[in-house]
Image (cartoon, rainbow, N blue to C red; front, side, top):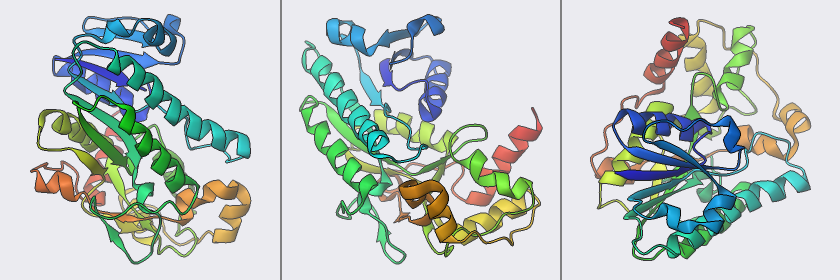
Length: 304
């Protein structure tokens, strides 16, 4: 099976590529980084976006496409960076759609990254894939335009909009920064602590993507999140328990806003997203509960 991964050098993409190669798939990574830094290996090739634009026929024979490309959210949200965040997502979809529509044989399935921010934020509501999108802030507005752009993909391919939550990884992403205060003994709730945190272990999101590729009944929006979201305060208490640190030092929301600006929405607001579609189609989580997910991350860290 031939699989294209756009953004295959990022947090989720690199883990996905490693898993796919281990399972015997042939993988092509489309990346904006210099190809000189990448070494092709058996069943693994690299393409630049420019090369894709000039020679879309290179994608002939592709069975599945996973597009995870997009500018990181982990930067101060100035007007310039917000534009980069939005345009990087829209352009990757547009360029990929142009290449795929030029193919003689279209891929059977296209998995497009999105985010649970689609639902807006709430302290009381629970969201699943049947919940309406609510473009009420920057992130949800980005997601709305991002998902609308997906309409340019070939209509005869099965399209999945993978709404990604907080991905927990030992080294990369937001979690290493989140646990840092606990390492120094100053962990605690952030803001009110009542904001919901939807999350997923890195292994489970990789497994979910592969599951979606092979489960032909799955289409449309899919929440890539654990079945057990937690409030910020609950989340912090479990971090403290697993890493044997206190949970006592609250961080005022206004301080977070001063430090991070508009990006503070990532930690001060949230949504309680449930992966209804994955569960209804029989996907089994390896780490459904936060304590076991963090224990795995902690134990793998100690072994290195």
